[in-house]
Length: 347
Image (cartoon, rainbow, N blue to C red; front, side):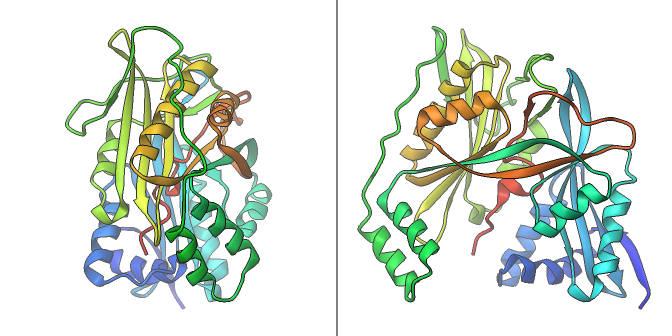
């Protein structure tokens, strides 16, 4: 066995598909698989994967995306780690792509991952950041019943879930939240428009992820099977002050939505309540029966709770840098990190 390491390219993409599809538990037809993988890995800017190859066979890989963050007021590139997989018989080999990523010049950020990953990274010298928290807002009885049936593991569950959604009724109304100031407006972002330049004030966060033109262009170029990516621009006195980015997609029985990013140049609980309320109402009007969000910011958490979101799991968040200590203070992380924002993939 002679292992070589290479980047992910159009030539190595077929080998990556053979590795990932079983881990993703997907059996797509070749035409869609090709379109999805090309968009996911080759269509974005500043993405990089390291592959471990045994001949023509990809036996392990790690994926990353270098994106702009604000660290104590300065704009800095941070590398987000995503898919990290290895075939069982190549576990030792599978560690090498991670070690190679750790030699990159950018600081690295990881959120969650398998229990094995969460146990390993601190042993490799990764240091903790404040945790990222999951929130969800169920809007129909079918969603609530599906959650209960999944937890019980009853025989014939699939038929019961289908029936629960067929007989479903609304259990919560979403109400818009008042804007924190007068002369405020909300408009849907059109992909042909220039994205609004809204960043948190330099002293608002020790660490804040930012979403801009290249990320929006990539999301809006997704295969239609991925669902619909939608963004709202929030303005005060006709000046953009905020941006929310969401994904609306259909699972087997119902539409679901994820709020990927809440970003504002005016950081306050009132501003976030307005943005979360308007975004949630917009997604509910598009027939979303369940809306999910992640955040590490206490003000965004308060806004989510005020709209009715329920707090769920927390995720380990860790940082690696040979030169820079983890930022200390409040941080702003979201669901738009590495591949988090594009999961789940279509069945």
